[in-house]
Length: 124
Image (cartoon, rainbow, N blue to C red):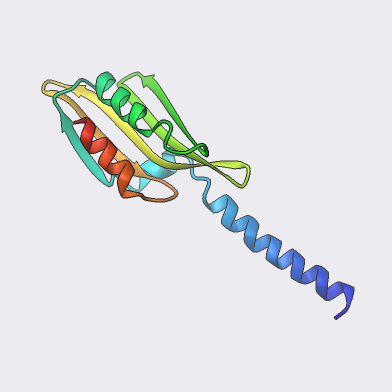
């Protein structure tokens, strides 16, 4: 096999790897576009509900990061995993206050794992 064939094979394999890598890096808007996998009503206000979820998700793995922030109409909690030098969103939770407490929408990102969904449900 000549050097040209080896280089072509390497470039082809690298191209496939790169496409797989970048396909896992979805923005929060991309994740919301598919719609929520679950909607939760809670007697807790959005701040307390999202604080519970963030605390539950923290420390599960050293490769995962939890971000939580206040928005103009509620709170967002996102769970990221460091993969191949990038951050992939695993889950995104949007929460807003309502008259009964709060309503939250859970979106899945890169992967889905039942244990993280159960952590959200336990915070209701």
